[in-house]
Structures are given as C-alpha cells and as structure tokens.
Length: 355
Image (cartoon, rainbow, N blue to C red; front, side, top):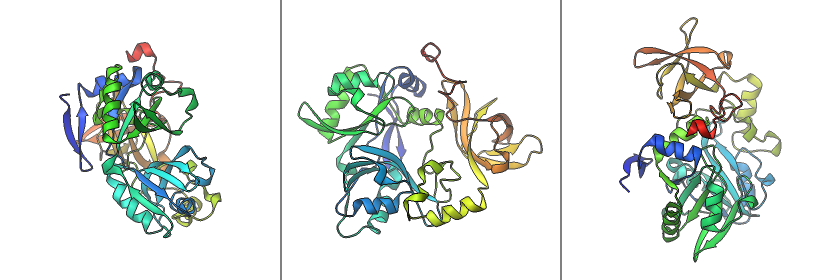
C-alpha cells in the first residue's frame, strides 16, 4: 500500500500511508484502521490469578467484572511506573493484559516472579495480530463488517465473536480519543478483517497519526510521560491507585509521597509560536528560571498549533500560565493548558471545522 515505514520498539511499523495529517483527520471525522500488532498480548490464568493482579497493579481488579477491562498501571517498590496498559478480565481467574511493545517481555518476566505455581503467564504476541478501528463512524463499520451490535459494548467491554469462520476478540477501547474498537485475531483472520474494513471505506493509518491523535487528547506514552522514575501521583493518575484495596507493589512509597507532597506534576501546554520537541526546557516567563521539561511535543492538526506534555514544579501548575520553551537555542512562547487539548467546552471541534 506504499506505506512509509519506521522502526519502533523493535518492530517495523508503517509511519503513514498517505500523510499523517490526512490520516489524523480521517480518524477525527470518519474512521481509520491501525495495525497495532506490536502491542503485547499476555494471557494470565489459573488459581490465584486475581490475587496476583491485585498485587501487581495499583487499581482494584476485583471491581472489574468478567467481560470488562480497566486502564491500569504497574509500579515498582519506589512507586515508579513500570508500564501502563489495559487489563481485561476474561474469567474469574483469567486475564488478558496488553502491555506497551517495549515492555511486554519485561512485564511477563516481572509478573512471573511474583506468580504462584498455579498461575500461567503466556506471551502470545508473536502469534496474534491486533487492529484498532477508530473514529466516529466505527460503530457503523463494526455492525456492517463484524455483525455486532455496538450498543452492547460499554467502555472496555471485551467479546469473543466469529465472522466468516474466523475468531476475533473485540474490545471497546482505543488511543485516539474517538469511539473505537481493538480487535485481536490470528494472522489469517486479521488479514480478512483488514481487507473487509478497507473495502468498507476505512482509511489505513500509521504510527504518525496514532501519536498526533493521542497527543491531542493528552494521553501519555510510556517512556515519555511514564517511566520508572515517575510515579502515578506525579502523572496525575491517582484515580488509578486504590490505596484502600490492601497491599500492592509500590503502595507504601506512594502513601509516603502523598503525605510529604508532590514536587512535580504532568502538564499540558499550547504553543503561541512554533513547535516544542521532546526534551525542550520549560522556563518561567517572569524570571526565566527553568521550571520543567517537555516529554512529548508536536503539532495538532485540529488546533493548527504546537502542543505538548511535560513536567513542571508543582508551584507553577496554573492553567493559562505564560511560559517560554527553549527549543534549539530559541525561546518560543506558550501557555499551560488543560488536557485534553480538544473535546473540551472551549475547544470542541465541529464536523465542519475538522473537514
């Protein structure tokens, strides 16, 4: 399909097929399809699997019903984030975890080190494909191609379906801010689904649009906003930490940080000029003091402006605060902004503007 490829986490990935902006806007206004088979697929099952997950993740997995999933984080003993991923509960003691590509083997080994002998952890990433159907028209496509009723899918629901003899695991989730689904299948089934989706008018999209779409929503990327040196409290993910569920790895360190106070926080910013890139320095516009750094920076096709994420000292966290960003020895102006950058009352795009 004349895709332009790039390397990502050891995988050869399509960066774009036509252009990043065209693919980005296709997802915002209609529907697109991504091949995200690089994401991990860990199956965790057996007596004690639920207790294991309660120990490993910061949220309360016992509150997740069978057939549903949750966005979750794993922490180290110091409270730093080891990975962020969606965990689906397939049965009372059976789970599907979808790690970031670069963390799959690490998470498998780390989890196995805490698992009892009754629990098996299987990495099926090499044998299963994963497609992401994203956009406001994804419900219609799901109904037409997979013959599924979109109304039966709540956020993070997971279903097993059969289409034309091929088995699929369909999950209502995504990384774009749009309505959408992620679909796991063996290679032959994935190829059938890909061709059927393209035949229904779905736009193929690459890694470039996936990144700009997640950035417009202020979604975090592991290795950028989340690392073993960053805690979920600093990343403003305290909603994912169930302190009241009992012990889990990192709990005591996070409780201590909560008591002592958090000295840096994740922020969003919009550029008044230019584009900031990863690693740029954030400066206080009054005294020119260094107050933080950029973890992700890029261009928003919807806002037609530079946007980004970063960390700043907590005392400077103020929406609308004017800042400078040092980009390649130049000082560019910007201001702190709410996340998501789009789909808020002030910035909600309309179909006409996006078109």
